[in-house]
Image 1 (cartoon, rainbow, N blue to C red):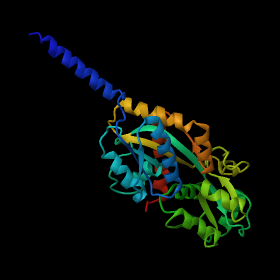
Image 2 (cartoon, helix red, strand yellow; image 1 turned 135 degrees about the horizontal axis):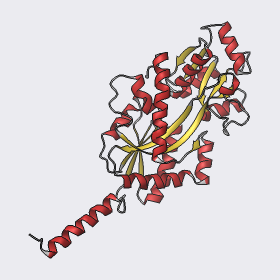
Image 3 (spheres, rainbow, N blue to C red; image 1 turned 135 degrees about the vertical axis):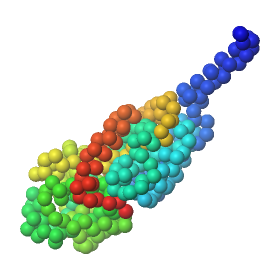
Image 4 (cartoon, rainbow, N blue to C red; image 1 turned 180 degrees about the horizontal axis):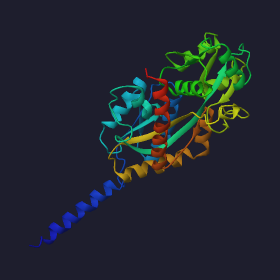
Amino acid sequence: MLLPHFTVVIFAAGLIVSAGAVSGQEYPNKPVRMIAAEPGGGADVMARLIGQGLSGSLGQQVVIENRGGASGAIAAEFVARSPADGYTILFYANVVWLLPFMRKNVPFDPVKDFAPISLAASSPNVLVVHPALPVKSVPALIALAKARPGELAYSTGGSGTTLHLSGELFKAIAGVNILHVPYKSGGGALNGLVGGEVQVSFLVAAAAIPQIKAGKLRAMAVTSAQPSELLPGLPTIAASGLPGYSADFTSGIFAPAATPAALINRLNQEIVALLNKADVKERFFNLGVKAIGSSPERLAATVKADMAKWSKVIRETGIRAD
């Protein structure tokens, strides 16, 4: 039996409207929420810079909601359980996708529960020492640590952070025994080193650079695989006698799994265009990070590579997250 003509027309119109919605032509028509870490830190500033730029290009306000704590578990679970409609996205560092290796009963799967949108930023951590420590190179630090096993201590902003991972990987490859002292925040870890409570630290570049320039800390090397333009002239740990060492701080932007591909593509295009703007790159650089816009596939590959690499380190060193 043939459908009446007007029924066919209505049915076809419905398909067109539906296709338009799925294709992202009508997206967004209300504010978008970007869930980020606790307020006040560098990650929060980056999220707000991205949110401000996207608000202009999307034509709708991008609201930053800070849901820090539990090493990212609170923010990630919230996004994973949100509707897959493009109106709730996650901006967080790689601790989120490494958390299942460091804590039991994590309430999300970093691969299955998220749709990658784009890498956002990367930065090396920096190996620094108190100026009173009689070393000026990584080999000298390793030699001193081997001569005084268990006597040196390094600070971080907490167990399970990228700084902690950087330190434990250093210890494992160098074969040294340096005590980890976790503070409650990155600021506490920095103050502990400047104040002489510990002798060594792994710090994010943004925190380390002003103290290095002021002569309050001595820089040894960057943790990235390649030298960083953020700290010109400073060697990598790998090139300083520990080949194969690399530890980068990476941030990514995700949507809930099952978000339509058209919406992911729209968000990706806007985010990549934003992060490639000269003024945005400069503002990120001033925060001690490098802006990166990438394809969703590159972010997915980064997540999987990080998980493969760091799961082994975490398992062998027994790292647990706060």
